[in-house]
Length: 313
Ligand SMILES: NC(=O)c1ccc[n+]([C@@H]2O[C@H](COP(=O)([O-])OP(=O)(O)OC[C@H]3O[C@@H](n4cnc5c(N)ncnc54)[C@H](OP(=O)(O)O)[C@@H]3O)[C@@H](O)[C@H]2O)c1
Figure 1 (cartoon, rainbow, N blue to C red):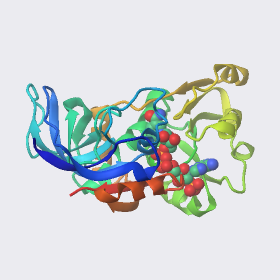
Figure 2 (cartoon, rainbow, N blue to C red; figure 1 turned 180 degrees about the vertical axis):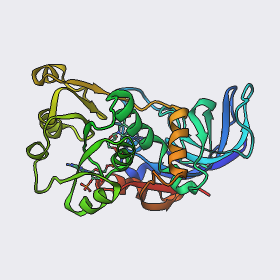
Figure 3 (cartoon, protein in one colour; figure 1 turned 120 degrees about the vertical axis):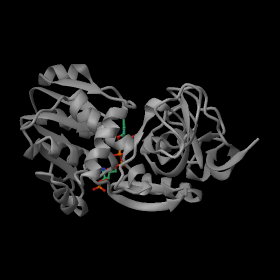
Figure 4 (cartoon, protein in one colour; figure 1 turned 90 degrees about the vertical axis):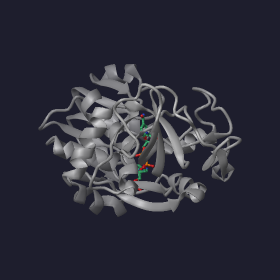
């Protein structure tokens, strides 16, 4: 059996359960491609899965390799794959429940990948898929926002938020975003029209009659988010629990929750925007794959600006 280096967890727990070790090298089944991973990035869901917080949804087959985001090169293809060939440079977001990208190789379905941005290296490309798709789907699929409309982006300096600001501005939306004081200048640089320092200002005091809120914090932040929406506006939640339909009704607004979907057409559009210099991921830190535990510890501070990347090659 061929092996590869990978980071796996054998039990659920803190970042210390992540082990850099040999694991079986996967082989592409029909409809799949084998990708040599050059870089992957850390998403909060990686940490939630490792900690066992997703067991209410499903159990992982242990030992399990974390990691959704991939930027790499197609090594080989399974039966029936026509779109991809060895040597293609691709990026994408892998299925949450399949062995992931904290590894030298990953198999992905052909519909989960797109050509990576040509002008970005693998480090920057790996920062985009999950966060970029989430931002796109929240703004344009769920909220269906149109030029001139107004959106409040919570956690605007984070992985999803900083890409959401950029995509929203490209669509000519008016954007307000929340972050701590140290990230106010960063939000401005991204094009945010109304950066809000949550350490000094309650966002519901300064934001009114908005068309949408992208809500990724929950708890009292969600409770306060209803108040900024105009009648008929929409709260798009990125984290559970499901937003209360009773609350939505009381405020005369709509509410939904999304789970990011693999949409290669959207990845291709974001790659074009990146190549045109119109979308750029912010990289907070790059760790070698073997230091995935340190990278996840950093992610769990919940104060990362942009993305943390794991370099594999
Ligand atoms: N449903 C889905 O499909 C989906 C997809 C992607 C992500 N998510 C979820 O969405 C959440 C955000 O994801 P992410 O990748 O963007 O996370 P992230 O990168 O870890 O977010 C970090 C950011 O959160 C900000 N933050 C922390 N507390 C805040 C507060 N009270 N108000 C405003 N900003 C605050 C921090 O800014 P400061 O340092 O300035 O505080 C930091 O920049 C996570 O829970 C993730 O699991 C869901």
